[in-house]
Picture 1 (cartoon, chains in turn blue, cyan):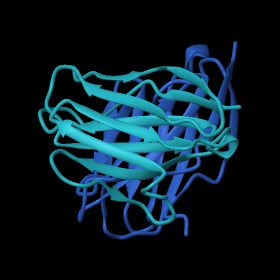
Picture 2 (cartoon, rainbow over the protein chains, first blue to last red):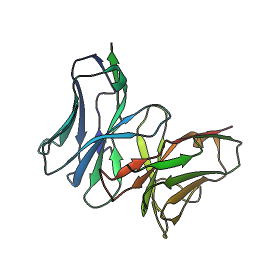
Picture 3 (cartoon, one colour):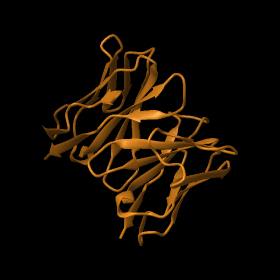
Length: 112
Length: 116
């Protein structure tokens, strides 16, 4: 049972435009959500997070939106840069514990 | 910021041998560390939660006798893949819970294990 899903396995966007990555979850006990960027053969790098009590968090070019009623979050990257090309994972933490549950990832390609 | 060092970054071993992977928190104490496994083009799957001074908590379907976890100090957790087989070949990543600041989860750089 996949509790965190990223339904788009890949995304291609032109440099300078907006990248929108989506993530859906099923567990209403998740209280904290995180986005990570990952290159092959490397560990994930933290990008941005959001608590379930908020609906938006912004940090530079990255903005995460949370819609609790829809159990949906999205990551907006604007403007997209070629260096943003990587795999992006959303992750969720349950209020009951420490561990993170990851989505399947979305591979982003930013074309110059 | 918090740094987690994972070693080795890659290892090749023969079938039937054991391999130990180390995960160290360099500038903070980590009472809880996590071990993940990632197959090519797939997500990170949590294998176990490592708690300092106590037994690890394994996820369903993960063989605790095959994947031995030791968290003997507040800065070191080890994962030993015992009697490795080719199907154990994967990318293993550790993560440490850092309660001191930021978002709280810092990842190591991963270990590519190839069993031949």
